[in-house]
Length: 95
Image (cartoon, rainbow, N blue to C red; front, side):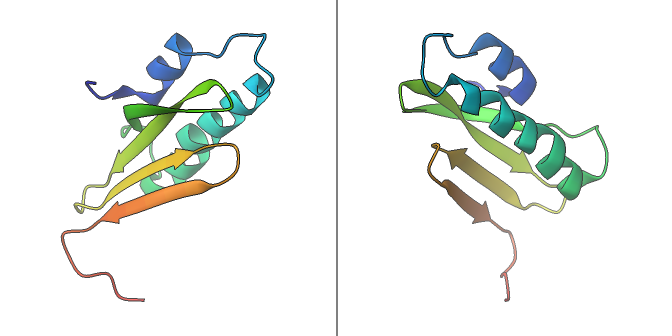
């Protein structure tokens, strides 16, 4: 799958109205697209991309990726129960 913007992917993959968990789709897309991207970028020039998909509760969901200018890459997915987030960093991350 070629990466595409989250907004484009979401518009093309909106769940069927008959699916029980359909209403959980857009709140997560909007959270990542608007809140998470703003926290990380503080601008609208960068986009969250969708690099893959997975299915939860019969709903096709995105695997998100955010690449920061400093080389950090966040890969995330949500499945109506929890988030899985991976961080790839060019430098050691100290806590």
